[in-house]
Length: 117
Image (cartoon, rainbow, N blue to C red; front, side, top):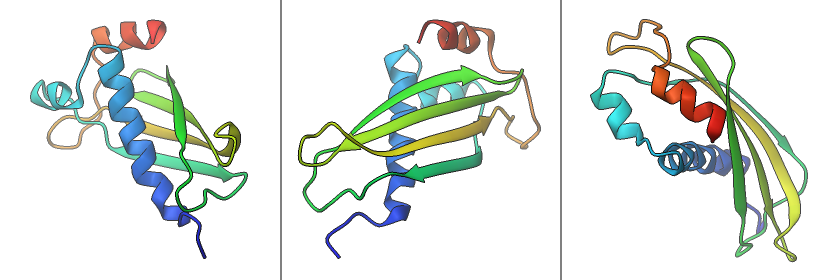
């Protein structure tokens, strides 16, 4: 059909979360090494227009702590012929857990980064 499959957006959103962390000075690998894992617990995507084959897209992502152990990443995906058309909006919520999957508080330094990133 010449358009990106709706499931293609999920890996793009994951890359945006990882890059957001990197942009505020923390890598996901460093979080895992310190014992903090952040599985996705909710994804909501609102599709506005199709991304077509060979369109360039940009993801703009912000992050907000929504509790002591959760972060919501909100993204806008723009692209299309003008590269500025809104194609989709998405919210991804992750939870901080330990290696056994038990909820834990977000690290204080990450919470501080959320307020500045």
